[in-house]
Amino acid sequence: MSGMTGGGLIRPLTLTVGLLALWQAAVWVSGAPPYILPGPIAVIEVLVQKYPTLVRHGAITASEILMGLALGTVFGVLSALVLTAFRPARRWLMPVLVVSQALPVFALAPMLTLWLGYGMASKVAMAVLIIYFPVTSAFHDGLKRTDPGWLDLARTMGGGRMAVLRRLRLPAALPAFASGLRVAAAVAPIGAVVGEWVGSSAGLGYLMLHANARLQISTMFAALLVLAVFSLTLFFVVDRGMRHLVRWQPEA
Amino acid sequence: MSVTAPAIRIEGASLRFDTVTVFDGLDVEIAGGAWTCLLGPSGVGKTSLLRLVAGLDAEGAAAGGRVVADDGAPLAGRIAYMAQRDLLLPWASVLDNVLLGPRLRGDLKGARARDLRERALFLLERVGLAERASAMPAELSGGMRQRTALARTLLEDRPVVLMDEPFAALDALSRYRLQAMAVELLAGRTVLLVTHDPLEALRVADRVEVLHGAPARLARPAIIPSGDAPRATDAPEIARLHRALLERLAGGAAIGGAESAMAATGAPLAREVAE
Image (cartoon, rainbow over all chains, first blue to last red; front, side, top):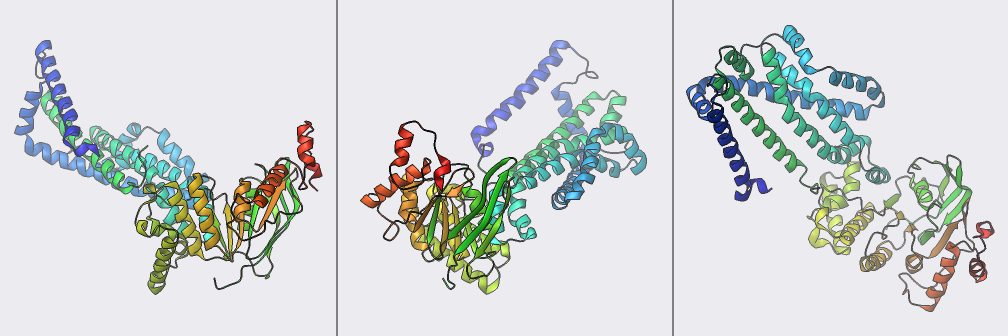
């Protein structure tokens, strides 16, 4: 809760300014040419100059990330519910889940691009793949660990299976779901950008690759900065939302 | 209460963990419309016996036995259960917690919902929490939380109430108040209370049963304190019964001094003489 107060803003601001100063100092001391290591001022210049391009590509990457996050969360929640509700499903679905994690997403990227094309679909699929497991396993864990005392109570009260799921198990699993979604929000951008690096015609990953080939390193940095700002914002929005959702939970 | 509270008979109850038989062929009578307190050393199967009556699973043990009401009707749907932990839902207000039963049964609809809400508020007033109806459980003290659980139990309005050490986690003063409150509000119901505290049993019970030995048996005769609960715990009779109860719990059977003499000479605790 202290993040919004004045005292909470000073630290991140100081940290940002300090890191930027260090960066600029490194450029001056090393005397590196701008096509190897551009300073923050050069990057900000590019940010201002190429603002429309960065926004256009940024919007594409952002939509990939958001769609991936939404779809991955929906699939994850549904899978966790199926795993909880139908015991036999666990034996069939669990191995699939584990295999989906054992295969590195990076290795799948070229195939996904081959199958789903150079457009947004393959990138959304990458983001879905990368967040599906954390969401499913966290939520399933939460659903499994309902306090047995509550279940005893519900049983003596004569609560039906669906009512118990809706009134007890689901709300009780929300804190676990929230941690899963936090991880998902943090890693979803990785999926989308890796997809763009492997093969794309738009997006921040494409822009970075394109700039890299032309030694426009300051453009690369500018794209990276846009991506970082979006990812951080996404994470904090999700984190804030989740905290609101489980505000009844005592802070550990 | 609209219906009379039935007496309950547990017949041939058995409980086994792997190789250990906790009890076998155990018969227990629980008088109708009265408080029966069940005492006994830890691990003797008190809670398991209560769970058997409640129709709850035996938590990893093999349990068996028949539980019948003396009116011949099934017990399912006629039982309210209160545990040592308050089991309040942290995301629901005090009022919503009290209304958990009807909500789980899908009864909280239409005109019925208004009646139930009114009744819940009335019960919260009875347990002294009228002002806190919209508070969240985390804002309450342990005693208030357990009083909310009592209101939730009362809202169920069941003729049989099973309580598993409901006051054990409370401070002395809260426990003292809540015992009196429970006696008053649960009058006329068939109550089975599992407790570790002999004085609590003597204060609130119409009949005190001690489960002890291996395999466990009920000590005979049952202790029946005179007068109406809640009793003053400093009365001479309660003090005498308290001592007798402690001796029983320590392994003896009859009310008397023989066991304490045995314990004093260092003889092994003779659980077999429990019969």
